[in-house]
Amino acid sequence: METFDFDLQSVQETRNLARQAKEAQTQLAKFNSEQIEKIICNMVKVAEENAVSLAKLAVEETGFGKVEDKTFKNHFASTELYKFIKPMQTVGVISDDPVNKIKEIAEPVGLLMGIIPSTNPTSTVIYKAIIAIKSRNGIVFSPHPSALKCTLQAARLMNDAAVAAGAPANIIGCISKPTKEATNELMKCDEVEMIIATGGSAMVKAAYSAGKPALGVGPGNVPAYIERTADITKAVKNILVSKTFDNGTICASEQAVIVEECIREQVIEEFKRQGGYFMTAAETSQVAKKLFVRGHAMNAKMVGRAATVIAETAGIAVPPGTKVLLGEQQGVGPEYPLSYEKLTTVLAFYTVKDWHEACELCIKLLKNGGIGHTLSIHTENPEMAMRFAEKPVFRILVNTASTQGGVGASTGLAPAFTLGCGTWGGSATSDNVTPRHLINIKRVAYGIKDFTENTAPSHSVCGAQGGSTGAISEDQLMNVVNEVISLLKRRGDN
Image 1 (cartoon, one colour):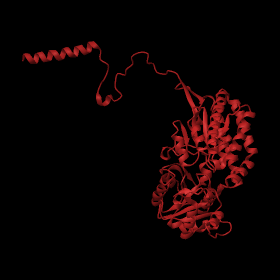
Image 2 (cartoon, rainbow, N blue to C red; image 1 turned 45 degrees about the vertical axis):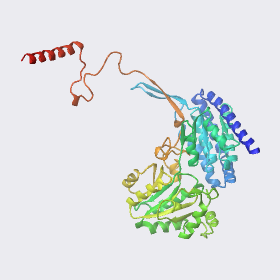
Image 3 (tube, rainbow, N blue to C red; image 1 turned 180 degrees about the horizontal axis):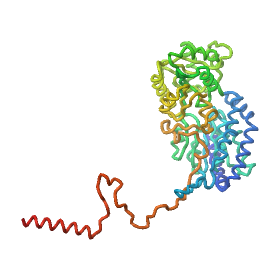
Image 4 (cartoon, helix red, strand yellow; image 1 turned 60 degrees about the horizontal axis):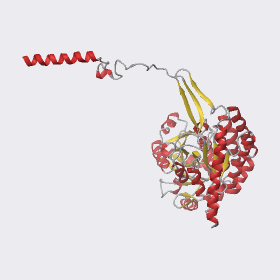
């Protein structure tokens, strides 16, 4: 009975949150750009002031990642994001084309639903709250149950900061009694106009099945190819910086390292020198058994853990200072468990003959759970980078750490924690999601071609093949008919 009551309470709370946030958003839609800017600035300020405390809370509650890296993510989701979106026009006339005489006017989408993952709970709340308000939308968050406290705290801080700067009350909400029923209710309630889903494949699929617009992201089984011309020391350093950042909890982190035979030993030695530990076949099997449950689903207890912790759990002795565990794999699929996404400090390691074989392997890995997301290549050959640009992903990161590159920290990509995978990955967008994805665009279009009279062209566009197709008057038509009749009569007389 208690469980039943809790479910009912969670559904009712969700309905209240959606109604309140929708009322608030209706008011926010009337705000001008100066008012929105003031609100955003205060949200960024409060996020920065609480970056460390939120990071500590997230690590304490979930056990995932590292405080210093989650602190950076909170900073990136606020200050760095703000720098990028500050000049972005999302209110009023956002474009005026004097040649085609079209004015574009931004309109908010309305109320958003934000689905929050346990791996990046506070930074994703900050990021989604800021891009929602920038585009004059309200948002209600559905937290992962294992990250409820930190998600709630981040949402409260963002709402309070927004309201203190002039936003309507309850513009940002968060479910405090998370249940499947509550999440489903929020997805389908009339007040919600769009869903932004960041989480597991099942959750993203549910978002797209809710019968309304959704921006969802899939998993990122990122291959990292070290090509023969690469700066090996730099490539290994970038991969380790990326894979150890928050202990591999960002979906853009590398999952498999691919090297050519001719540089294999150099790469292995460099990984060992920088803190990589190459497991034996038996050790790889032991670790894989700890990493996965129900086939290739990640064991939550192993998500975002240090390599030393994973090794100890699997009963493996590793040198002090080990940063990442690497296991050699000979193929892709169920028989090779490390060929799947691993949101922790473990990498698959593959050796190929040449770039042709690397291409084939990258495609297999992407189709094994990362299609459309991200691919990383380390090369000093620009032509090789463009060859890999043909692969089925929408982020091809060259000579950079994949985690930082994918979210826009080390590249010129838009700062974001929602990375679209395009139609290949089942997403509605292939972009890093920004406030521009959260607006409707209204167009005022002036007439620039005169259609007040019958102005049918005298010749077909395809007239070169079909000859003249000029308009024929009734008199001309009758003359042709009379000529044909006269001709037939003369033939009959003869």
